[in-house]
Image 1 (cartoon, rainbow, N blue to C red):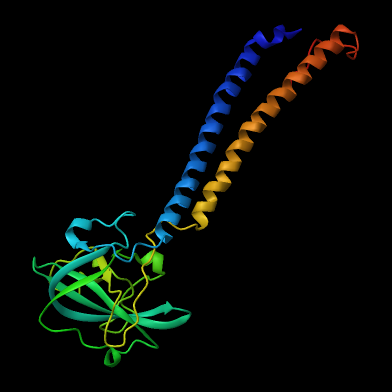
Image 2 (cartoon, rainbow, N blue to C red; image 1 turned 90 degrees about the vertical axis):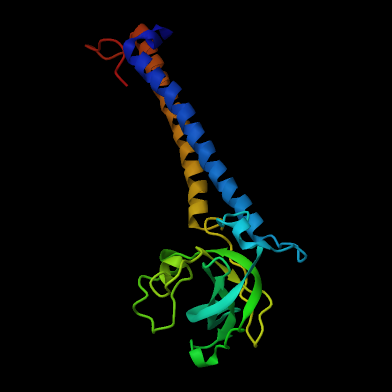
Length: 259
């Protein structure tokens, strides 16, 4: 009765099942691995770093990645231009960052967020940076992107203000080379509030993470559906053959019906 499994049509069906099921299982396992990686990254990004963690030279921590993001970095130089970053929320209140460029001994500049102040961005309220040569220790952060902050252009902001923090938004405002990273001082002075360290991009349990989990379920469902359809076709074929052998097929029928 089962000789029909050796027909060319069933060879094609069986080959499709043999190939489709492993592919579906592999893709489901891969999507599950992506979700687990995001969970691990989120756990690492939100874990508190030791308070006694020593600061490392800025250049030794670049480029910023999941391992170095949030690490204390030290750099020396002189403060230069100062900018305000408006519409930044902290503890449920709206305010602005005070960002000052630090020109390092090597000539490049790194943006330093010296702290946060509540209310609308106002340059007269921002304290002036220290003069002379200084050594700054701050938490290392990756450059922000316009898409992540919902900013489309800097042209809508008043002079002296930035929408995002990064070399891309500062390159046309200052005449020297910039680090594509920034520091946030955790012990600010002059009444400024420290800005918390932000988790690196792609490490949160956001919509993309749960999309990976949803895709995992979809691929496993596809594998189960392939097996279900193979079993349904097989049962239909065997029932048709059994009816033919028992003489139960309608008059004029010629063997098993095509599934």
